[in-house]
Amino acid sequence: MTGELTFDVVKSAVAGTAAAFRCVTEYQPMGGPGDKVFPPTYEGGKYAIEERVLPGYDMPVPCVLLNSVQSEANHMELALLEAWDDGHISLPVITVDFAGHELAKDLHITSLEAPHRIADALLRDSQRNGVLFRSTEHGRRLDDVSNKNATPLLELCPTALVFGMWDSAGPRGGLGAKFARALVSEIIGINAKIGVKTGSRIDPAAIVKSAGPVYQAQNGSWTLNESDARREKDKPVQCGKDGKPSEVNHGNVVPSISKEGEGGGITMDKALQTTVLSLPALRRLCFPFGDTRSDVETNRAARTVLAGLGLLAATLMREKGLDLRSRCQLFPQSSFVWELLDDPETAPARFTLNAEQAIAVFNRALDEARERNLPWMEQKLVLSPSPQLVDLVRRSQKQTAIQTGAED
Image (tube, helix red, strand yellow):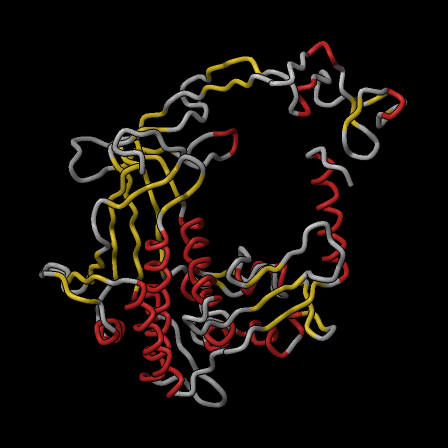
């Protein structure tokens, strides 16, 4: 029997002895069973493949990583950012705004997008009223955070308590505070078989190899004239190894086929997304504030907010759909069901939860936390990048333009 996952269920689970909320969902490619999907590639263009022991199989089967724990967290944070942008939820957000610095591409990066969240170097190297962030009133609070003093993170960046954080870029370096992930999600392809990759290109302009060589131009583009070429050791620098027109994306590409295992996508029995919200991880966190030590009810209120935030993030991500990358779109084979792992001698209670319900659960939890005077930053905190950070970004954008053949 499946019921609705309500605020009272979440609050009771956090206050009790339950181990976790778990949601396991089976997917198939949007093209249907047997359609090829493309996993992410890692160093050397390889897929992350390993054998796993899984129920329903007589022996270990090859499984490929389709979306990592880190990538799943990023997707969930972006879903939260969209809900915050749309005004559906209140959420502490810190923004680094690069506007007005005459960059080739303006940037606007939030603590929901920065890889290390509030501890990211992008925030560290930004300023508030001319003062570096970690030296401001808000930033200094991070120097003393720990499991026993998680209040500053609840106020400024609660997602760091849900998705984890290591303050390695802060003043204490590798000794900076660490918070384990309370919410972990991953997608794998089960019983994966690697395919082959083909490639070809017919140039409608009929440009041939012998029309080269093509040289790197001094303005960052390309040229056929040696006199206009960038020079090293008084010699014109060709594009690529041989100066072929294909080095600047002109000309034909000879039809080719890769060897098996060289990025040719995979077919699989099914994909499986497993999301687990650890309640013991949340119970490790304590929330004192002011001169007041943390107490049982205040801690439970804060932990319930974090549980609601995790469930909301996972629900929003699932409802947005799994379009992970080019040629890796997945469709669920059943509705999303959460299980509450509590008494090991009884079957887990099962619950449904849609986005509207998850927002209601989270907002109710936040209201109770406010009643206990727990701090929660309501207004966006805007930082400006430091001059050296602006210069570093400007130089990086210039180098990227040169390397991709764009003109300055």
